[in-house]
Image (cartoon, rainbow, N blue to C red; front, side, top):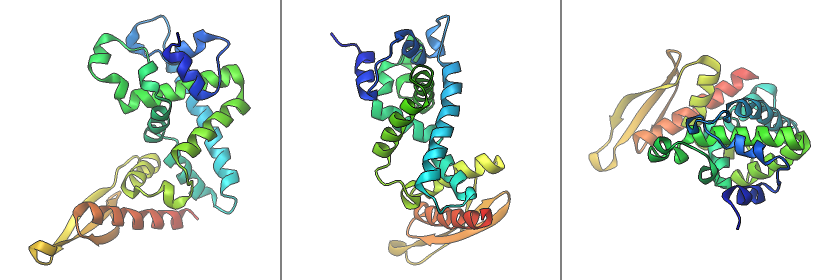
Length: 227
């Protein structure tokens, strides 16, 4: 009878010779063993940074360093790794405490993201960079069928927040400038501020729509500044 770890290895397309390594990669610290996945998570994060950086370098030969860094930041983060973890259905394989289980730990973005990083770290240790690169790129292309600027940046607010946190240690602030028009056809004007400076303004049929449009303009301005 196949275990959940057996099924995970089928999804990865790789069977570990050292089964203890994949078990360690899937062991959350709450499980209270003499080992957990935090060290493998640290290693996997570095490996993913390299793999994604190399992938973007060859995938976008005409893109400048500043934009490549922003693209990488949009793919090497908790949200992206959570998405890849869900493709692998990692949540059902993780070893967690009963308390964490009852707290829906298997569905937490941070726990899933960390488990994905540690699994990549374990793969790197046993199979080497080339194998882990092939597996990661396959997962990336499944998660993002079209890897281009528009596809990666389509959620402009999230991307802008990730970038400003990475580069400035701050999150953008969105302020309502005004609302206008009749109640049945009201429009909203939103300004986005970064580090106290107004970066962009946009109007939309809802506050969320206006925020996305303002974030998109702000991203384009940041890209120009990076050139």
